[in-house]
Image (cartoon, rainbow, N blue to C red; front, side, top):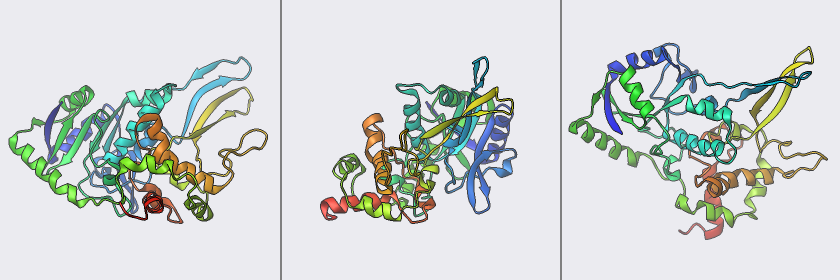
Length: 347
């Protein structure tokens, strides 16, 4: 829609003004790492962070949430909807791509009213990554180095003494008008932005040995690869990879009843396809009893199944799963090994 400029000395005022009207969450430092959490004072906000332990997804699809309350005697039920106005500030481009996928998952076919209530009441403010997060990230290879169109409301780029603010939506435009002291970008600002983005591109290396557009086809011919058995032999089935993934959305539900045995609620909570009992059904049948089968399923979800269903890859190159894995199973090494097996490493 438009490009605005906010001087850095005015960013604190912008955030403080938003805090008066919204729950503002953003990257905060936790020991030697960063986490997305509520911002209660400006000193807690770190927009120059590298990555976070959990993605900002947790504010759209919480780790635990109540879906509805019920009375076991009367069979009455009452929806529990969390529609608190929220600003998620400082979302990296890879996480914006992940949210774009989640939007498709939770609004297509079977609308998830809990997710959509949060999404509709959330303003996303992205920030341009000018340096790679670390050696685990591979966003350039996955095509997520730049923000996806139509997913964010505002997007910040650090241009030195100011932030350039790409205003994408009406909600974003209203936020700037209402809470920020900003001016329109001029020709010099555009030149600075173009120079910064041009200098950024070569800093990010390609990690995959092939074009990511080939990934779904590569997965299709890798169903019987011996690599899955190799990964299954070392996988600990701990679920760390899926817990930190910004695009994983599997969940389970359970009913909790109070001491009265009358009032209770239904809870939704994150689950993982890597856990031993995930695919266990009534009668004791397990659709994926081996860790090899579960690893194969996980990577097919990332490299093919989501593309087939939604036209978007299920991996955004954030590298969180590689950081979290105790036995160093990573998407980059897995995808490259599958490619090597099919081609001998020759492109």
